Length: 277
Length: 280
Image (tube, rainbow over all chains, first blue to last red):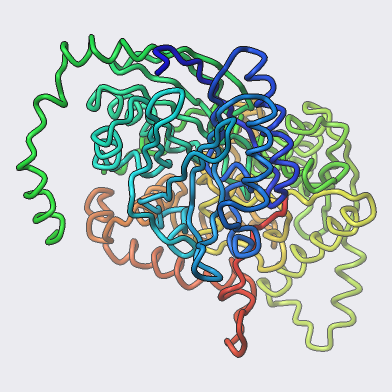
């Protein structure tokens, strides 16, 4: 397995409902990332379609594999790069059950997908109205190491990142569509999730304005000690590339050994208390 | 949560940037050639016009000054022109008095004593002019409504509230004043008593019966799910006053929404047609 990986954070704005235009933009940014020797390029939550879609989700959602994942697979194959992007996924078994999904594609095809576990339905968010929640962590063995996927609001729930880490991921990719007033939360939580799990964390957020909601960008790549390796601009499209070195995890695991000190018996209590909140 | 003026303090540079980005993005995505806005000489329309100019350039913003004889005020006219000049906004002045007089003559039940009906007629007439220019020149109508007035329904339904975008609608009046100062609206405009100019001598605070400094804190408390008791206690007010504001806020929801219908079919406007506001 590779020890060092160059990761591109590709914070784009999307044309809502225009999958063709968004796939084209994903390819443009994948090419730019590859030109700068990136091996993995990450796009925001629902980057295939844009975020505020409401009832349009029913016509935009696609099965995986499907025409859009086929197109992204082709991009990954053609340019020899791994890609993470977000899309509304139509369940294989029903006709209108949709997941908010992150997809990991490599040069040899689809590697895996993760269905968002925590769907915000408060304030400006209405995800539970449209999406079914996922039940599985998304951790995948790749040529670039073991990569875990989480999505946006999941980061407020340390259990998801913890599970992803305990299933072996060394790099957690968090794709996001976070509006500006929540910036401080994410800037803190991304660092916290990296430190408490001694893991690399790549956070990629949407930019642009959708129905008056402004997305703040500010994507960042964070080392297991909380150091921000590289960060993207606020509020505008940007592509930044940082290198991660998995050997760094060993140093921080000996310095702040959070995984060694994990207390399994607490999780039973957590479950018991959470069921009776 | 402490209800003090500090609670309403924002990073004005960030607020300005957000609003400017919002306006620019909307106009571009709509494929419009610019913006038309009613200029009254008051703080709200001056601020909205200045931000519009920052977003798309003053040469793409048309300020319509729409006086009528009953409420004609030379000071307000001068202020409207001052803002147009300072932010290099195009302006056009149209006296709407003849139209109002024609309406008065042709409305069979016209009552010259009914200040409210006749005042609303003025606001709705101004709306007609704004939308005529918008249609004719492919412009976006920019509204000037602030959050205080919108929450308590202190506006004319289909009148001054009618617009394509309302960039100040998430800022309370006292916040608009701060933003106005920050972006360089002259103090004489910021500091004068607000008026909807529906009848002579009308001032908003007198009519609402409460200063904006207090009203905004009450509304801020309501926005943040505080109880009426807690708001009254913190602000040293009678609970009845807070209840009055809350009641007014809730009763006026009909002015902020599309007309209500009753559900008959599969998907219904206003109930469960949930489409994106814009398609881009």
